[in-house]
Image (cartoon, rainbow, N blue to C red; front, side, top):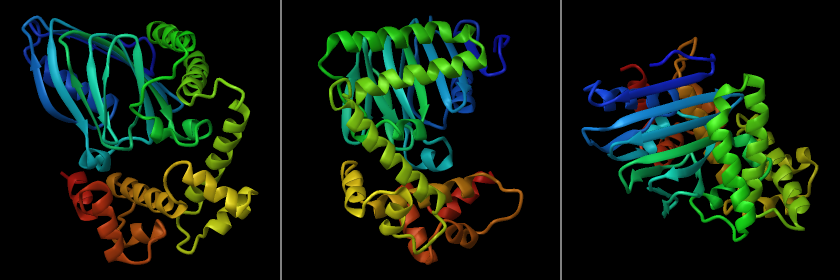
Length: 328
């Protein structure tokens, strides 16, 4: 690990010929500084050299990785890894050199130089190399930031960009410049720049660069407000759609329409958020001992058997298994 220039910057640099356990060290660096993942395939050529920089501030993050000499891999975040940890963030993955294949929501896309996609960290995803050498930028945004600007972000994941080449070139140039120059910024400058980059990227991904931009932003803001209300009131087992609409100051019919645009009902969203909160409570050791019963009641569930079945269906493991893995 090289000397850090700032408290919010982490760096990794090494060559296989100098460090026999380079891959193990690199993967440990990713797990420690980015997010839990499963390594399903990993082979390196003798001349492999890896350089990675990671920076986080205010929920935003930037990862710039360059690998020369040849490396083949497949990384995955499946139900078990999601349950074990991570954040509710969205990634914008941009390829500068080389090619990778990203799969999520039953969609796959080969990411070539000069292209980018949106990826949800809260849902299963697989990334695998297609070529040997690579250079890529991964820009991370908090879920709340994305929710306030897009009404159906997950529908846009692993999708091609829009048709306006000039606008896409602007986004790519901005992302590439940010990936190269963000490391010399102060923390405040980095955070301000990340917000501006995020605004531009989401504008492009959401197809809002047209006369309907204002209307789209209003819908996104209303849906974001409704989601914030739901998250704030997760512990209320009798929370209804009418309660949320009333507090948000919008009609019940309009609220139904907002959730339908995301391809789910409010009940489905509420259930998913309750389960994610339960996962967070179970996977992080609290200051006091908390039982599974304490957790499901705190998250608005009233039946332990139903909670356990729903948790297993959502994450692929039982609540008790999360506690067991935490204590290993």
